[in-house]
Image (cartoon, rainbow, N blue to C red; front, side, top):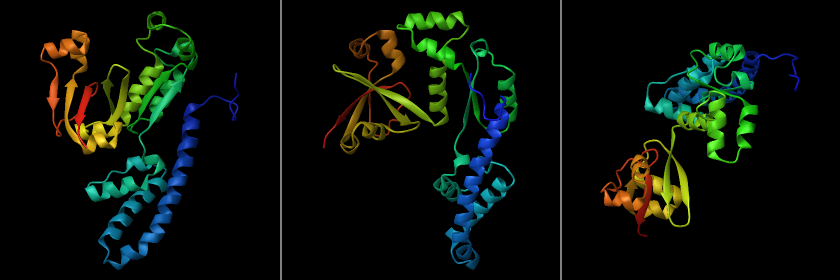
Length: 257
């Protein structure tokens, strides 16, 4: 019921407009940095400035040609580090979310296919959701009601759940849990983080005084039904500072400061 400002529905056109605006902004950022770095780089004595100017030049060429910053790849660690420090808008990971009507929630439609074709080669993800369907799911009270509703329209899970999982994957995020008599909480961490780093998410003292972590694997907890049963089965691990936390781990940290 909302009329588009251009009077028609064309998601590819909308995408191109946004891409253009973001690339113009990035080009302004790159040109500004190049102006400050060029003199230092051209003298030849400042190797850091020369490297930075080469990175900026590569971005300038791509953006001027209508290509986003994420299309430019760098080989060395120093180049990659400087590229990240620039925080260019079009260098960020992208997830395209296509909002469709209820009948297209499972398979998409012609608009979705147009977007899918337009983003080929972008190394970007595409997700289909139906906002109206999500609104109806949100009004249901129980998990069983939501499950039954999803099955009736041919979906295995809600669009919100798929969106969260896709965003976590795109940003390289995972979740571990802490559980006690008062509450159970989920904590978000970067994939590949070690136990002390994850402990510090709760409180910096946990990381500073980290001793060890008691770890229950989520599948073990689900299959055995309780922490006591996991302990009795010898499935609770005791891990040190080098333990790489895994998605779904249930953690209990021991520390001393």
